[in-house]
Image (cartoon, rainbow, N blue to C red):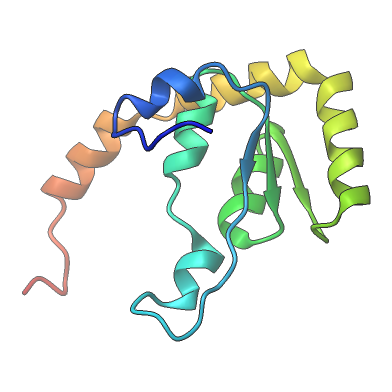
Length: 127
């Protein structure tokens, strides 16, 4: 088992992954909202896609509308052994296509423009 690796050094390990697995499940009764698990932060999408690593995710909006829309992996309607086996087989059989799409997703996302726009736009709800 690997010890905890602080960011950004965890990317050294991530870069060697064959398939990325992104599973977000709501946790109730904690300080975070269950909505965080439904619409999940995209950090893992970018961590895997920058290395062209195909992904398997669970069927939530924050993953389905990125992973499947960009054809860089698949989202499981049910997270069980049979679904996972089928997903791994699909990703393995079509690895180069999914990997290329993951790299394209990362490369075509113009993060600089998005941040610049966010910083320069006047919002009607400024506080």
